[in-house]
Each structure stands twice: as structure tokens, then as C-alpha cells.
Image (tube, rainbow, N blue to C red; front, side, top):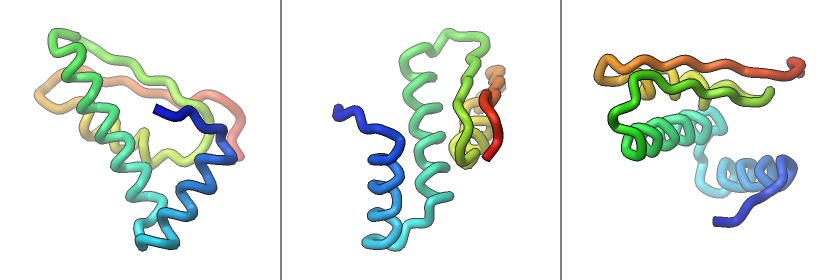
Length: 84
């Protein structure tokens, strides 16, 4: 896995949107869904998961709220930092 800076990730997102016609909201929703699936597969017996994110697009957080709470498991999320 390659770790990228925030500026690099914005460029990657922009290129994906332009080249493949995928909206930034869809990218964020897919990211949130992927995180939820990964967390629940790694911690299937967890009673509650808490996710804290920095400021930025909230599409991933919306998706996490939806997909993270599946199966009646508790899910909490929060955003920290100043709004843009």
C-alpha cells in the first residue's frame, strides 16, 4: 500500500473523476463502505466501533454510518477539526 499526502489524494480523486466519470461523492461512499467491511471482518465480535475522521468530505462518514451499523451492531462516528 502506498501512503499519499492529502494533496496527492485530491489529485488522484480528481483524475479518477475526470478519466472514469466517477463522482467524488461516489468515491467517498465506496471508501466508507470498504472501511466498514474491513473493520467488521477484522473485528466480527466487536460490540461497538468508533470512527473519528478529520475535516473534509463527509461522504465516507455517511457511508460508514449506513454500512458500519449493519446487522444491528453499534456504530458511532465523528469528525474533528475546523470546517472548511
